[in-house]
Amino acid sequence: MECPGSTSDTKVEKATTMLEKTQKHPCYSFDAHQKFARMHLPVAPYCNISCNYCNRKFDCVNESRPGVTSEILTPQAAKKKFDRVREQVAQLSVVGIAGPGDALADWENTRESIRLIRAENPQVVFCLSTNGLLLPEYAQQIINLGVTHVTVTVNCLDSAIGAKIYKHINFKGQHYTGEAGAKILIENQLAGIALLTSQGIIVKINIVMLKGINDQHIPEVVKKMKEFGVFITNIMPLIPAPGSVFENFPQTRMEDVNDMRNLCELDVMQMRHCKQCRADAIGLLGEDRSQEFRDKESQGEYCDSSTQGLGFIRRQLA
Ligand code: CLF
Ligand code: SF4
Image: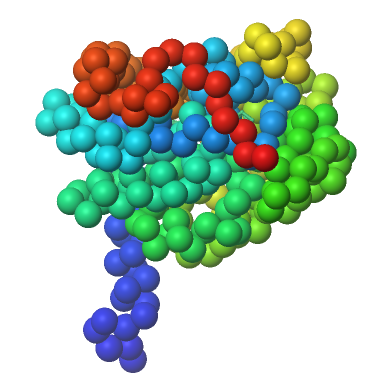
């Protein structure tokens, strides 16, 4: 017989907490999306890969609608902004980091922003999204920091397909292209997801559906994600971004996306209410209030003055 406070009791408590948090997360729970709000902290401008559907002047397309530009905050400015938003957005339950580059390529800023807010607000649900290249390196730190929900964009499992999607990756100071780059990215994504799910982190997978490139392959990706124990997959249409390699590629029809979601739902729960938000989105998913909170920043009160203003050019890691 197990005594109180045993490992299995702790596991049950942890699972219950995760379930409660997930029920308050507007992206992971359809029922929550009209009741609970999220706030994105645009603190991570760098990216360490180059997706062919991305124009790097704008927010990360893995979580955002193409052509949207967010300002960048320092961790201290992000904390101030959080304090202000918490007072005015009663439904706020989640703080997420979705770029505008990759949350892990800018790990110092991501970590410090979450640490500052969590120290005073342990009840908040912390979420981040990443391309997954650095997940094996940071998964344990992410967990230790108290992040409970992580999104990884996994467009394929096959490096020959990946070579058509990713122009290059920068990893440990080396530049890789073609299948060699895609192979490293895919291996790291899978290893990182396994680390997260094995420790009870709730994982969502974003997949950009590219007609003629990965569309036939998506069911296989979703089946693999099921094996890894992910919570939900979010199959998104390609919306061609001007200035990207795929700018003339056809936009994926929502009819095709929905057919794919219906097929994949047999394996993993499907997200159908994604709004492809900005990296500084605030509020309920359907009611972005970021403009309301940007006015003061543009007066210099909250924004990092070195990156203030529209049209920042995303910095790339060498
Ligand atoms: Fe933000 Fe993403 Fe966390 Fe949600 S968004 S980091 S999981 S808190 Fe949500 Fe926006 Fe879709 Fe993202 S609707 S783009 S899925
Ligand atoms: Fe752009 Fe990087 Fe996001 Fe890919 S992961 S869409 S290159 S910001």
